[in-house]
Image (cartoon, rainbow, N blue to C red; front, side, top):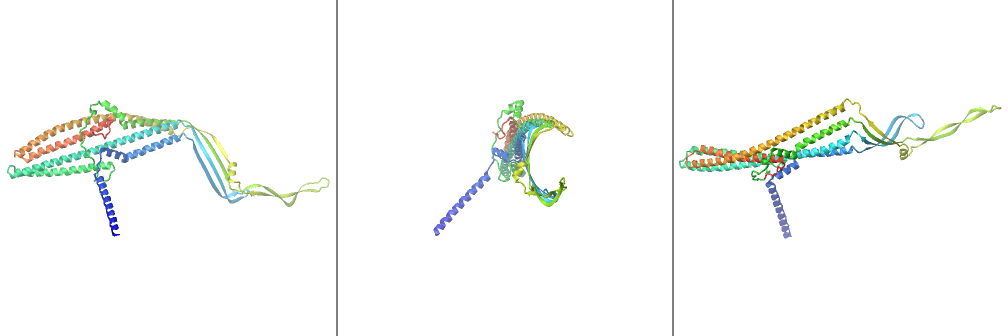
Length: 490
């Protein structure tokens, strides 16, 4: 028995150990999760609130289409009522007014079929289809904007991490120079003040490292908030070394890029859809000035719960009435008097009453608008103005798109030149810094001049990183207008 208990305890301990190991591995995996640009974009497109709102707008547009289709169908409605009348009413059996309660039930059906409504139903359906298309354009445009925002935030994190690497590398260089400076001071080659200058430089670089780490954290938080991720501390991205991409877009004529942008950008398509929507709104407004014709049909029946008079029962009351005399004898001719009593019965069966009392009505209804306080004409004029406004907005959207393409093209070319200049500068700064360090090591240069040379070299390194990622993003914006997905950073 004791042996069996020990075996069970060992099994439980083994099971608990496996569970703990799995939990540890899963926790480590969750903390080590690093997001790629594709994963960030996909997650944002799936969870972003603005995109969800645009998706709901699309669903509303689809519901509007169902409503437009329903306008072509006949309407059918049923009605029913049961009433109690309490108070002074005429008693049908006595003919007298009495305080009583009567009940009635009525049911009915009605239908209306539109025949002509100024083509408003057809125009409304066309408008609904166009509204769905416009909502799809707005949703796609929102996704493009979010993709650009995520890509920019992603590249900003990479840029900040590269800056941190530069700061740490320079810190190590300064630290080595400090150690070398202490040796030279002890050897009497350099004054002690040079070591103090190097220590001040080292402290300044420590501060720059802290600032770079804070910049990385803030850029991570910014991207995590865009992705609706709450775990800011464990959120991180894959550190990919993006080289400056080769592209043929910069060599393309601006007109070619503009035409490509008109084919791919949704903001221009949205403006075109707005013009068409405004045109259908004008047609709908004009249709309200025309007569409408519809057919109707109605059926109704009723039933009562009151008693009925089935007939009259005549009973002699024992008295007579003289109605004449016998000629010659003068004897009176008498006629008996009768008392009339109504024969009262209960109400007929409900189904019988519904069958007896039913009725039908049908016909055509014509409505001709004549005067309505200028509201219809004002509505037509208002929609005409909106149509012209939409046309102006479309023209402005074309101009804005051309301006954006020219701006993106010039920004990309300028960023490339800045990057190429930064590469030339860093070569010269590195050579100058190496020369200054050699002179410092033999005591021909003081620490202040060495720090100045090193600071210029650090700035050149930072400029290379900054211009590199600035060029990558601006190039991706230009390629985005050209129809190349934002996630293609290779």
